Image (tube, rainbow, N blue to C red):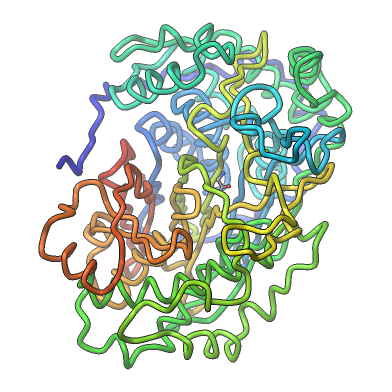
Length: 575
Ligand code: GLY
């Protein structure tokens, strides 16, 4: 089957909107709070791995104007909101892990539940989940955080003026970009999914392969954000338009937007294999999951001795580890502002070693015996998008952001062109109710006003001796951290070049369904490997999405980026 799905993207000019076309008032009135002092260049160039060519062009432009990794990241994020509308966004949220001037940072700009949200808002009178209510339409939308997150990051660490980093996105929204075959296919699928439920086709009905697609309303929004900063989105004309669009349909009000805050948090940090892992803390489950996976595998080194990559035995051992990580995830993880997540205990070496010791070397452990936390594992949307950035000064940004499913809730806020997320689906719609194993699910991720839903997004940076070594992330819902885990193993345990490590087969197990291995679409399910895995007691299940890794490895002083051949991502190195 086809592994490589390449788009026919056309070259685009760097004819970005001129700075003269946006008013200078914003720059004068809102200077950045703390700009990064200039460091000597320590790498041969700056580099990006991003989901599409336009975002790479935007980053190149920013680097050529003297911008750093944070400027480039913010330009990429706004550009993907235009040219990668299936997952790039300003109507959603995400996480950014940064390494700036030798220090780690993390900003959480995940969506929040609206003030009027209630624990049982997706249940009917009988207490059953109403199918689709948290996935489609106005009820599915969480309060978006992307604009606040980008604003915070650029003000704290960017070198360029805010409107400089918005300029590429404004250009593509106003003047258009060429629609790729992959984007057109995803649009077709979304049109069918949202038919009769949302206003999606009104905005995206004409987004056909090869056309130059313009989004004038989005261009106006972005120009206002360039002029007025994040306050336009949260307390200005864009906030008014979003609130008006929601009125009578959904829960989000202008008050929700006014009260939204992105939060600087302590990233998860851990030592592993001579590297320092810097990754996403709660409300992501991904960072804790990644650390547990890597350390448990290291604890089980004797079991892995002489086991070849992606052999049946390798798949079995990794599945055993994943089983235990997902058991914890279901029970203990949620928004740390609402629930005390036991981060230290879950990432403690002795605890992880104890969990590793429970792994059965030969056969799959009985699923019910893997405790704690056989909680309700909600099926998660696999979409989302990630980009990785390093600059020649040695700073790095690893950013994953999302509107959840492709094109989110399918709702476009009237008069804005902003695709709104369906992130409310990442909450547990029905906590406290026994699942198919008779075990009560966790309250940690129950819906509460202003709470952030649990995520799997895992933007990650590895450093060695204080210098960036790897920047990595991917979309994929609950497959995010198992995908990153496998690529990191491929690089560091199997010494594969980055491109091969990213392209290699991936698989996934997540405790439930019991002993089920999710399988790459292009792998034969009747081949020798498949038969050997089944003989161990596993069920193989095809999945149509195994992530879209965007990664940069630093070799010596040279950044080597790689984009996953499964997507339409591109890499760029700028001298
Ligand atoms: N919505 C996907 C995630 O947050 O992991």
